[in-house]
Image (cartoon, rainbow, N blue to C red; front, top):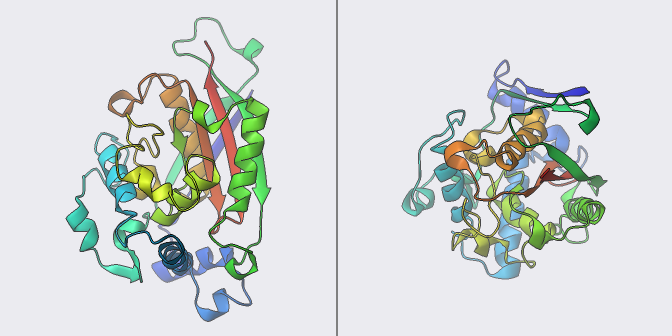
Length: 283
């Protein structure tokens, strides 16, 4: 057996120190030196997305609204309060067009899980077992300007495709997707990269309930990074724990009906790295 633990502690440092640390995920010579931060990278991607695909300026609002709604019934979430589209539209700008409801709050946090061979588990388990049936990591260029298409999260796409191939599944077989919504634009781009939406149409899934707990592809089922809180380096383990709770039927009011398979995907920087896992309930 192996204990896997993810821990993040950001509140020991001031905001400027934390932002400086986060900026190390950008290109030091061409981005960070100009004052580029993860927030401004996300803003640049949002501007490009709106320009390329003609998406409305409030097209990403549904991701924040859904995340906050899911967090209402998560006792461990930072923001257990639903928001309305009018609140999103009136939120303060962080970096045009990015507003505060597009940004996940940094948080302290820890999550843990136990990996074991099935034969090593004691008899009489209270909940169904969950197995990892696909796992892959991929990388791409760190800097946005080094990518042929900055809106194409190639690492996310490659890791998702490899993990799905290992699991012998397709996106249509996945019951829920715990993606890395550090910024709302990454929710849309991740859905597209993983094969749940065509390029330029990921935002549409947030308009008609497709990403809700009872939708076609539920995401951020406990509030995601946006409303549960973004625990930085512990995010990937959080996702796996939350997905496992769904597959074991332990999500309480946040339960996705009949959840049998799940995908988790954690991004590094603006998508320069991506780790994808496919989980399945053992029947």
